[in-house]
Every structure is written in C-alpha cells, then in structure tokens.
Amino acid sequence: MAAPRPEAQANPAQWPRPRPIQHSGPEAQASPAQLPPRTRVRDGPTLLTMADVVIDGGALTVEDVVAVARGEARVRLGDEVAARMDASRSVVLKAISGDAPVYGVNTGFGALADTPVGERDLTTLQGAILRSHAAAVGEPLADEAVRALLLLRARTLAAGYSGVRADLPERLLLLLARNLLPVIPGKGSVGASGDLAQLAHLALPLIGEGRLRVAGSDPWGRPAAEVLAEHGLAPLSLAPKEGLSLVNGTEPMQALLAFSVWDAAMLVQAADVACALSVEALLGTDRPYDERVQVIRPHPGQLVCAANLRGLLAGSPLLASHRHSRHAVQDAYCLRCAPQVHGAVRDVLAYARSVISIELGSVVDNPVIVPDGEVMTTGNFHGEPLAFAADMLAMALAELASISERRVDRMLDPAFSRGLPPFLAVDAGTNSGYMLAQYTAASLVSENKVLAHPASVDTIPTSGKQEDHVSMGWTSVRKLRDVIANVRSVLAVEICCAAQGIDLRADVALPSVPLREVHGLVRSSVPRMDVDREVAAQITAVDELLPEICATAERLCPSFA
Image 1: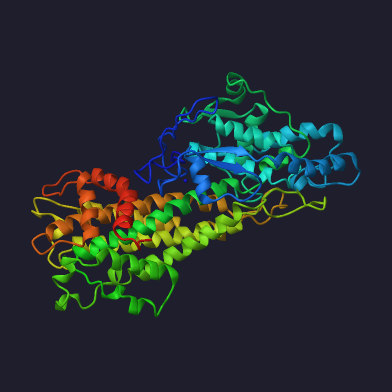
Image 2: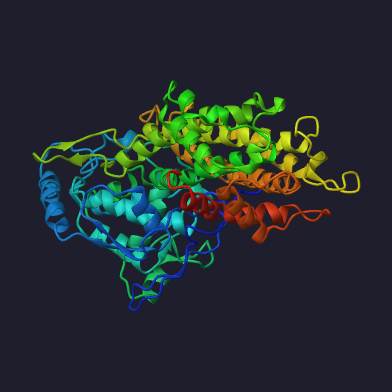
C-alpha cells in the first residue's frame, strides 16, 4: 500500500513479461515501466498480443483488464455506444429544463443533495466537483493501474446509464491509446461513493487540470494542460451531470482486485509445485493425496490440489525409495494437509473471481437513467462486495505463505528433516546455509497476519454523515497487493530450500520427472549452494521464475490446474 510506501509492484518473469508493443501511428504504445510494489499486475498466463477489446457497454473480463493494463491489447469504443448514450443524455437535458429536483443533475452532491443548483451554475458545478474531490495523497498509482482505470471508467460510462456524452469515454480511451496517464495519488478513499478522490484525479486532465504523465516517465508528471497541448488535444468542457458521473464508481477497487485475482491464480499453482518439491526433499509420502481419501471430502479446490500433487509426484524414484519405510507412515500437517489448505485458498479465489467478474459488467454510477427514462438514485457505488472479496482473498493467501514457511522450517531443522544437514548447509558451522531465508519467510508470514486483518469490518462516517457507512474497500485491495507480494517471496524461499534438499538426496534417488524438470529450471538460474553466498539474489531469481515453473509443471502434467 515514516515515508510513503510505493504503490506499484516489481516485475518478475514469464507468462510473459510485459513487453514493448511496436506499431505505428499516434496510438503507439510504450512498454510498462519498472514499478515499485502494489498496484502493478504481476505476470501470469500468456495473453494474445495486441488483441482488441471493444467497449460496448457489456462486461469485461479479468483477462481483458490485465491485457489492457500491460499494453497487450488495443481498445476501441463500440459502434452502437454513442446512440445508447444519447438516449439517456436526452433524459438529463429534459430534467435540466424542469422544476423537479433531480440529484446530481440540478442539485448539489453528497450532504448537499438538497441544495438546488440553477441552470446557469450547472456547468461551473462540473469542474468544481472534480477539483474539490481531487484530494488524494500518497505515491501515485502505477502505470498499469491507471491504464486499467481509464479502461474501466470508459466501460461504465459507455453502458449508457449515466446520461453523459460519448465524448467522455472517447477521451478516456484516447488518453489510454496515447499512454497519457493521469497522476493519481494512491491514498484517500473509503470505498463509498466508490473511490471518489482517485476518480477525480483521473478525470481532472479531461478539463486540462491536474497532472498527466507519459507512461514510464516521472510518476508525478507535469501539468495536464501542458501535456495535452503538446499532443494537440484541447480540454473538454463538461456538461451537466458529467462531473458527478466521472467521480462516482468502484473502478479503482475493480482494477486492483482484478490484478490480484490474476496474480493469485499463479500463486496457488506455484504453492502446489513448492509443496511437491518439499515432499521429495523431506522424504515424505504421497499417500494422503490418494484420490480415494480425497473424494470423501470433495471440496473443489482440495480435489484440484490433490490431483496436482499426485501428478507432480507420480513415478518418483525418491518417493519409491522409502515408500515402505517406517518413518513415512504419516507426515506433518504442512505436508499431509496441503490439499485441504491450498484447496481452501483456491475456493476463496474462485469466490473472489466471481465477485470481480460481476463487477466488471456492472453499472456503478449514481444517479442512473434506467431504460424507461426515470432518473434513479442508487447505492451501486458501495464497495462492500469488493471489500469482502479482497479481505477474504488476503486471509486465504496469507495461509498459503504460512503453511509454506512451516515446510521451510522442517527442511532446515535436522530434528525434523529426516537426515538433511542443519539449514541445508553442506558444511554446517562454517556455513549457515538457508538459516536467514527462513527468517525472511517468517517475517513475511507475520507481516501478512497484520495485513490480513479485514478492512471491511471498519467504517467511518463521511460527507456530514450522509455517507454514514463505507466499505473501506480501497484499503482492502491495496493491502491485498502487499500480501500477494509477500506470498510470492515465501514460495520462492521454499523452492530455493527444496531444490537444495533434493540435491542433498542425490545419493538416494532422483525426484519425479516433472519435478526433475522444475529442479533443473531452478538450477539454471540458482546453482546449488555448497558454500555460503548471498541468499537474497537466489530468492529473487526464483521469484522471477515462478510463472515459468508453473508453466513447466503444466506442460509435463496435463492435468495440472
């Protein structure tokens, strides 16, 4: 999410790395910049290079959001959008000329909802709401997060329920195409009425105010008027209701939750691979993963994880070497109960994905013009569904790191490692091996315990108590980004240690074919450590390999999921 912490996320390796996209014309895309942790989406499954995403008012997918955020897809407005938006716009124009108070059209906002605004002041009001609501603080959001916000806000407006002109989504998408990114400070939202402050900073450059940056440049950018002039763009003049429609919504929460669901899909796979490597290194048994015992408690994620572990360990000479040994009767919970723990994380992830999938097709403005022409006030901007999903996912992923650290500890402790040297050091005493790697894992696991406290159980009144219950969903999604980064590092520590443990079992037998390949991939970047050397570089290298490790497991185990 002392000095302010960075708001973006460092880049690992494949599936694939965000890469420069080369094409001609004014919409040429720059490659995503190297960014600090939190709002940057991590690498994941391969996306089609430069696919087209059409904004037609319908739902987007997590994959659409990630592709656009990483510069791997072009975006265009659908052909029917302007006509759909004109229909609701005509309702707003009619309301302006009438005497009845219509919230957000001819009244003030929030606690000032009962204050009438004369027709001559309505245009002034639009710019005023952007300026007054642009009150966020902290480090700017990462390029990828801002690209996602431009996409998502354009989608909401294009749905045709907001009563605004097509000029607004067109301009948002033009900024996206030219990689001109509003500077959006990362803190200052309570998650209802959506993320007002962040969206105000997103919208200010449309009227030539606030700050803009070219993707990859100084994160604090320059005055938007200067940047727009350099690119031959004139500021827009906002019409009645357009200021309010630009700031109401959950799109910032949507963006970070979509990134998190994407990242977590890779982490649950990496955790299964890490566990299988640890089973090999610890001379564990695969008996608890047998389908006959798994199907009698058929939670979906548990069944997937157990099948993954069976596939990864199948045919292992190292497991076969001690299959009938007395020591392998029953393993510790961190090995034996991996399907139950990893699987439960998968089930929470499935829930979070269902929530964000609904939200990416929702209209989160207020008020809205429904198809029969009535202007209706709503609460669809409240972020509670997203806050719950983010908090639950943070708690679940924290457990993924917790059980991983316990496997690390067993590999390092000669009292429990079944013959491995202390701290996996070949010459323990002279060398400390991976002693401090476990410190790092323990530190991150403990930090996650703090970050996993749900923000959504908190609320604080705002706007003169008109907005008297808020979701705190922006805090939920921001800290979820930190949890994901920590989990990734802990899994990298486990894989480092398990690879060393497998090396130290070489005189017994080899691991399974899939795990042999994974081990070889790790060793291509991180050589065996017979004499102490810097451990941080090893952890970083494995962190960057995690997507490729998962892809290797998937290639060699057709059922791997």
